[in-house]
Length: 183
Image 1 (tube, rainbow, N blue to C red):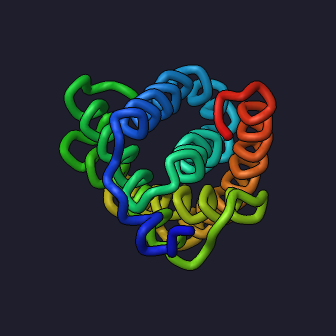
Image 2 (cartoon, rainbow, N blue to C red):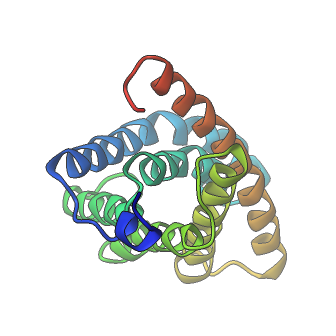
């Protein structure tokens, strides 16, 4: 039986890295599908679309953290997405800041994972909420420079979207387990 330190600080295997890369690619691939639909709603409410769609996109980061279950997996996921977005210059790229805005949500999941264990619905929802809040705060303050009231509305929407993302992540993980994709 491994203790927590041994389990979390093991090196990444090739399979771990391939899983992280595949889930990061899925997260980027669905972004151009989800964002235009979300922006129809968000633009009419004058709120950042990322706070509304973020939970659905952060669910892949939460799934990665649960499947790979090693310290740094969500951080590597965010880093891979940030570098990809910056190099390819799409999906609302913010230049070099994309590395920060994609990586810090992963870091927030890593910090939260130090206090949580397992893959319960509660854990997945918290992962998605914290990651989405981190991304929303970064973009809202640094890029959009939102005033207080729109920022608070964005944060509330971010929490609700994160809860929805966690719920969907739980469903996806159960289906993956049912079909033997993950154990």
